[in-house]
Image 1 (tube, rainbow, N blue to C red):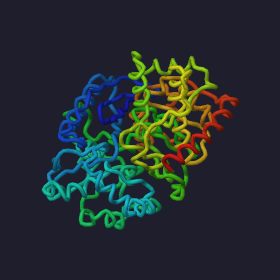
Image 2: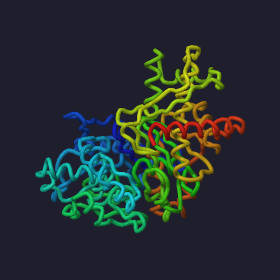
Image 3: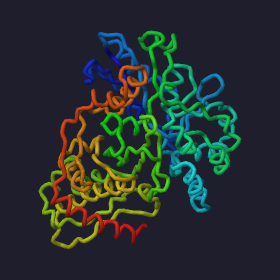
Image 4: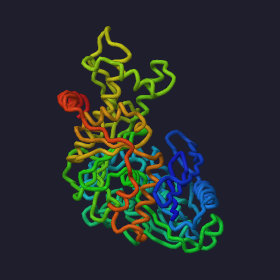
Amino acid sequence: MSVIGVDLGTSRIKAVRYGQDWAEADSCAEDAVVDRPAPGHSEQDMADVWAGLVRVVRTVAERSPDDIQLVAVTAQGDGCWLIDADGDPAGQALLWNDARATSLVDAWEADGTLQRAFDINGCFGFAGVASSQLRWLQENSPEVIERATTLLSCGGWAYFKLTGRRAIDDSEAANPFFDTRRRAYDERILDLYGIADLRRLLPDAVRGKDRVAPLLGDVAREIGLQEGTPVVVAPYDVASMATGSGAHRPGDAFAILGTTLCNGLVSDDPRLDRPGNGMSLPAAEEGGWLLTYPTMVGTEVIGWCQKLFGLDQPGDVIRLADRSDRSRTPMVLPYFSTAGERSPFLDPRARGAILGLDVTHTREEVAAGIVDGLSMAVKDCVASAGSATMVAISGGGARSVSWCQVIADAVGVPVTLPDVEEIGARGAALVGAYEIGMFDSLHDAVTAAVRPRQVLEPDPERTKVLAERYEQFLQVRGKLFG
């Protein structure tokens, strides 16, 4: 058996082949190019992304000793990937981190549009989602809108090129256009954002067995696979990483420790009445939901501390923190983005703060404050989602056992560390394998493939100390930012 999982990230395009034991048998990756033609703009050439996918998949397929039984694709979420009637790009893809529509979003927040949409949709609006970007294009580049016939996502673009089908996974359709309760497009949201006439662009939103389509013959020859090989459009990268890290049952939480901290909880209820903002997204498991809270910054704060202290690498910050006197750790509010914070509260004015310093504090103690502050942000997001029984950690920060232990102590539940690097590709492959009948359930698929390299139990004494500190954290955050 061999299956290929593809992860089209913002900065890297990856293909991973999995064998019978679900270990990573082979992989290929290359950098992706992000164009920034103007301040706040973030774009990709759709043809270049497709060409990158072809290269990495072909390389892995050519080296495989077995026939490939499945190709499953996950990708960066949000953004605006438009194609025309011939299936060609209608323009550059606008990415999730494109900020050109910020003024529109600010106006929608001020007049209550975002809240009214959230009450239907369960997802917060921001400049990087298609509702904002379509409205911006309508006002500023109407020729692109006129040329376009279908709105896709990055994963949907890859799926279209592989299969000829214009569709996206419903985890991507959900934000921003779904009525969350019905898991279906809602005209009221289009009306709220002033783009009712663009309903024509929305593609099929697929889930379950409807995600599966056969590989086109000409594409099969180009990438070295058999015509008709099953292709699956999997949930977008955050949802696939949750599955690939082992978070798939209600009560399972996940934390992706990357440039941002993307945290969430698997639930059997979309919980539109929950505190904070976040997103209620359809999970890979039928009837399940991902209550997701992505922050604005994560390991970037550790990188800032590294530079400030003149250290050689980010890991040195963690090692400094490990040597500190934890009883003297200052409180850090880790809202260091120039754009403020978005989860679990929205405030573009929010900024980082280091509180409780005096002239006797050391670098070690400040570093510990940074690590603890980021861990508090994880706890804050998970607590906003609901009650967790475990946290599956992935991302670059998962390499630090000591940081992950702080998260276990802060959240007060066991934490699992990943056994592989490419969690998103594995999650996509597992969803795909389940959908084509390799497993009887997604639970069986995850159980067969996910073997955490380590499980960290919370230390009861540290959990008690950090619970008290968390209450102080919330009080200070509330006074400063709400």
